[in-house]
Image 1: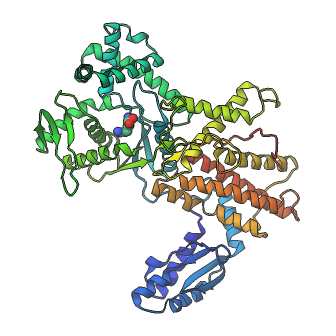
Image 2: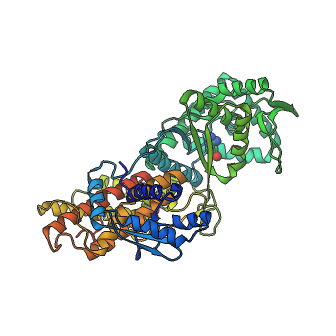
Image 3: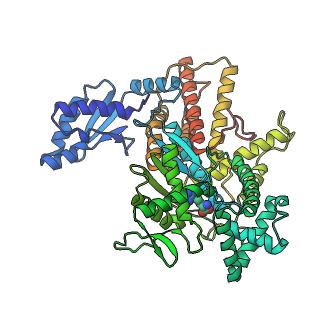
Length: 583
Ligand code: ARG
């Protein structure tokens, strides 16, 4: 069910346009920019007039005259050069909300043509700590995963683990250099493995020979050397366990834990196919696919390096083939920062030449970097890369400061408080990220991001807890919700805001831009606050108004909870903040 008032108006307008012999493409309304004048606007007359070389006001008048007969419309006026301003009747808005209140989807429709979409996000790497870049990919990807699913598409989220490149050879080489062999590998835990990797990185930067050894070991590993494979298996497993813990904490979920290594067999197929189709060639000992040079020359796809190893290009191309062949992907979306923009351009072009994903929509969504106060990528105090675990701990520490201690509130021991700390801390981290448009980077705000005021995740969680408390008290007082009656202007404004849910979700889906939902949730929470200040619930002038306002409050609660869910954020029922809680 899609209960958007716009849809009703668009249908009415389309009929009118047909009757008046006007091009129905222009029979659309938009939410008015001037809430004081109207709820919705139709600007179609201006475009029509231009084409027909007629007076726009005259066309607008003829449409407006017809609109006056529509029972859902309170007033219509033609303003300026030919804008049609429409105000809906309170009865129609109230009826819309009454229907939303009993709809499990809260009035939000689904997509017309559901399709199968694979989301490739997270992208953590074996033996490397996850940093804030992996945080953004995970947080944005998880939100898009939930939105796609809610909108009716069939979604598969794949973590695409970095487990097959030169870093694998580097770390094996480092362990051999230090231990003499790989016998002790299985005793190493993730912290030790990470240290080996860091040392390997330094060694390979300084020593060309060490780099060469690492490359050879990588090629041998890919080729199936049993000793390397066995050691690598352990490194991979330890990393996966650590990564899963991190993502669990962040409430980020994947359907598949495929890695680059899972594409290995298919890499061979890709190379054979490239030869068959004669799209590859040998260049300086490497096998490459040359890309059209056009205006801007683009470096080629490298399928096999001169040492015989496959590359990041090859594994990605092979993975696309697997996703198309095995998962019937119709759309594949990648989420990484801009440093991989060229990589994906090359991969997508290579895929085009190989013809392995016809009619599949391949998209790379590029996000901005998470910066520190100095505007440079976010670092730890000692200048190192900020890892995810540290970041979560920082956020939790902040949140703990604004919560009561264990035992201070009845029923809240250590376990309950820590659960709340985690829910609020994760909300703070995620919302701080998702409130920004994806393409823009943002400064990781260490002071205010976990506050209960301002445009933060905890502010919205708090608004939800507050409504929960209002509803609990109403229930205890024997009050129930009832049909919606709109009287006060604040009531009407809030109602119109609630009725936007479908368009908000659909726009977010279309633009793959969770900031639209974040913005809506924030302004909805604020609009509720204004409403609640002006329109008392329990002490409303009549019992019918109390019942109506309870239904409105419940709808706000449900919609805010759904919006947070779509952002990947939990909504605790109680927030445990003594001041200003509840009615
Ligand atoms: N592992 C990569 C990195 O850390 C990200 C993977 C992105 N996905 C992909 N299919 N290439 O940068």
